[in-house]
Image (tube, rainbow, N blue to C red; front, top):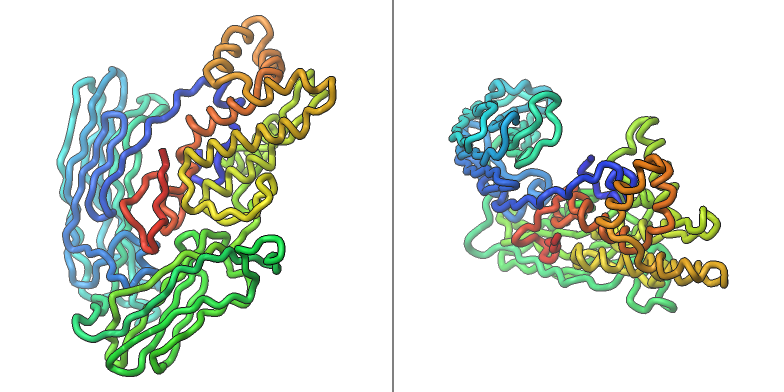
Length: 487
């Protein structure tokens, strides 16, 4: 199962045939270089010295790395790993590992190191660890002007698995954070007079074509994002970074400018697939930077298909066999089929909207018939809308007299527990495929909802300023509002 944003909206066959229990939610607290994580009786606690949080002026690197250090420093990661063992014949793994990697032609001179244990026992166990990385005082790279020269990757793990095939692992499988190694410390903001950027919130939805007549809250490309810069000390340099899914996709660096009002201009759809935000900071002639950057979200419309794959599971979609499995899931999930396949309801559009909304992007919703920015939507509200969208498709599709008897099932149908029980009772006499075929006349909107509520947490992005998918909700983000409730 890949931690991808394309949510497994209907892994119906896999969930029912294997009757998998839903995983417990992982609690993660901290800012990367210190914190704790816990799941299913397992816990990891860690702290770091010699690594530092990025200043506000380095938002582009902070979006990709948890902290920074620089040449000549010594990084120490210490903490405790613990597990509450509950059964025999299980392999318990408590491990802390550091791997360093140089870039731009520089070979990282420090070997990988690890601490921990791997044992089979029934009593609870714990271990403390301390790993030390003396960062070299110099680095020879192919680009001597490159400030970023290496990575320090830290991986912490506390879980237990089947000792034979290492399956069914439960616990904190991997808590990973990365420290960027810089050639020298970053410039710190000035404490006295320094440039100040004012970037008002941009509230309009940005579309590829002019939709203002039908949708007054929209504006087309080209679009101007207004901001202003003040500086008592005179001229400034302005730096702007446009982010998509937490990654920088466009940059602007000015020469020396007289402070005043400016516009950041986007002539066309930017690279990436959202969600988008922009951050701007300024520096004076001495390199002093204000307490920035100033950031705002941009509701730039993207096609839902960029984030969706119908009602199939992205976790199986690699290689020809994965693509075949995805086709089977889409075939059974994209269309509800009643009366031995005679009466069909297309729910693929609802699955596509659901996938895109889990990613927190802005799309045109053809069911609601309006543009929606899903950045502030909670996982629960998205799932509830998903069921409502399927129910609407049921009402639109099952209108003929011969179809109407199936409408109550399509609107609700079996719960997940009822579907599992049906398979267990029916499969011994009808066979798995026969039971599966009979189940199709029992499936409706409720089973789709139950599946995404029990299996979908890994696909919901609760931290929209960090690249990738993070199911754990951070305390705050910059810009504010990128932290979504994942319950």
